Image 1 (cartoon, helix red, strand yellow):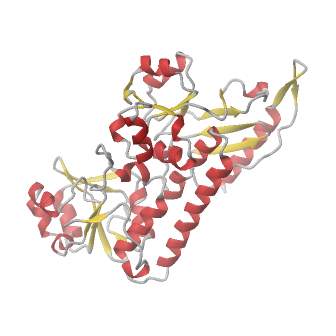
Image 2 (tube, one colour):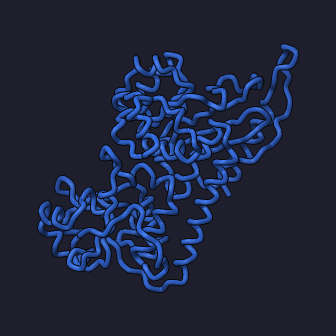
Image 3 (cartoon, helix red, strand yellow):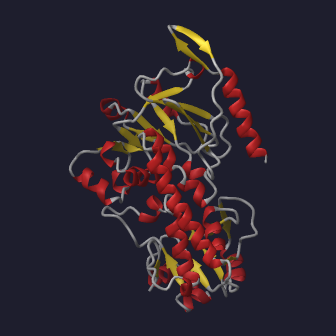
Length: 380
């Protein structure tokens, strides 16, 4: 209810401040109240108007202190005077730089991968279509996100750079904007729900004038996701699930409201830390995890491990868990791209339908007898 009220308030504010240029003179007129095109993502709002769209990005990182408004306009469209304070980008864009592997699948799915001009840490990209372009020398290496190669970026002069932040201090992106480059922030990683993350494909859809295609792609994912959840609702068996692994003497595992924990619950599992508050990670002593999860039926996502031997070599105490003894451990870390990037990290946020199917196949294989795991593998 509160969210709907805020959307209505925003529309009212936009409607009373809209003005446009006519015969060289600003003319104030009421902006039609168009609905927000976004359904699940909490940090993204898109309002379509004749010739332009207003894109609002809020909470792009935890505890962000400001929101961001962008105006994406088509050729020969006059941007209203009241919107000229915001970053404006002419669409469809022809060249782009993105900075997270989670942005890559949207380009791939929309068929605009040829527009990608540069990326930091090219080896992290797993998309076969984009790797082919990298091998052909058509995509430039930009260094690291913390220290983007400004000289190369200015030379590329892309129509837009899609950045992301982890806190309120983003000096590299600020410098690029001062150099005259257009930077738009993407907050997909800070979304808290599977469908909320996936809906950010609409952000790229409006950049390329492919709103309808982005809508269709997302609707297919949404429908498949909901159909898979419906399969699980009648299942009474809810096997217990452990997650994570030890790193530097602490066991890291998802908090109860996190993206990963939601998948386990929606797939018909009982995540043993589902009652914990928060959307990040818990850091617990080994003994605490062992006491609670020694007899867990499944262990999903044991860090970077790709075999039972790797796990035992790293920590012999892992062998004391029932899930290890019964070989019910599943990992996404063994499926990698050509240069070592983990496919799950790149594609899973965009394809929650596949993640959920994997989880259901693991926990309730009788519900999806013909389905083959996409991201996960059973460790041997």
